[in-house]
Length: 524
Image (cartoon, rainbow, N blue to C red; front, top):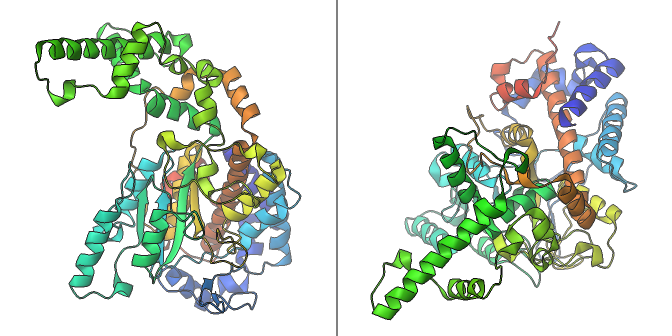
């Protein structure tokens, strides 16, 4: 769907406005020598922070001295505005968006200015568990993290943020005579969320950054994925620990001269391969501990069991299937543990689904989701969730505050990626942050046998029916990504049309764009 959207976008643009994107690239703002020189430096110089393109003053200071930033929009030509509407309408339709202002909010993505300032901004990557975030952390290390001091100490590619470690390094810099405004840190990453940084549910990380990075504008980036795949991966890796068992089983198959099996139709039985093997291993461990206790022998720490494991062994001996929820996706969906842990999981992405909900719940993830169903909240509808996602995740509303009306603004989303669209997501990352593309995207913790391969179509349909709010967020996010990709392609083509070379755009990942299927028109 995504690749076909971009291809259709290119065809429509060429058909309506002429070959080589002339209606876009002929704008004086793009074609003048002065503008071309300015473009080449645009990511290396600070933007004017005092007046936006609509004449408003921003950032604005309230009576309390708090800064409120405003989104800046460029003014399109009539031809551009028509094209933006065409593309926004196509994307809203492709992703079945129903909120009445979906098209307008997607049009705004075309004219919203990139106001990232690497000298003044600090962004935190909130890595939702099992969303491809470890790869993004690795990418940040090799781009934002060069020199390494660009990434704040305490960041964890797969763990919670270590505030004590971060504070120690900050204090070392200050003790060496560095002014707090000159601290070199540009970003951080962890499973720990940042928002809300204000209000009654202020996160520990939000409070920490406000206190220790007072001269930085705090911003957020994140990753999300298809809600069913999100659950499948969390179920397999975090709740049940099945991936390792499947890997061991497949290694045995290879030794026996058999092919790797990753789905039930290939012969994979998760209940037998994963669950039964785990239970047998635990029972043997419990037996060994009991025998050692009877003989008053001391075991190595690795051979010991905790109270929960001891109870699990006792329950198994009494005929209770303690891992019944792990035996298949259908077993999970029928288990009360699904309602306890896996309802409305994307609540942790923005901190709420719609304007009527209270902020909270982004700080930690893993088995601590335990979110209330978004569908039961006051003010919920698919339309309110779509609209809020388009505004908040889309970075269009900088007045959102967890401290109530007119409260200090929450860090805004300046980039997000989608796991299923990793190539497009990383291309946009390089382009937006003016980062030189890597030869290859870091690939971390990618499973050879993907957990969603043992979820049936019926299982997927069940999740879609149960989790309309999560799917509304995901659909809106995909629509935004469509538009951002289209905009980037337009901007690159416009620069090529006025004579800029590929070498003059080192932040463009030409290789991945080629793999995606993007073709460039040659200038006359």
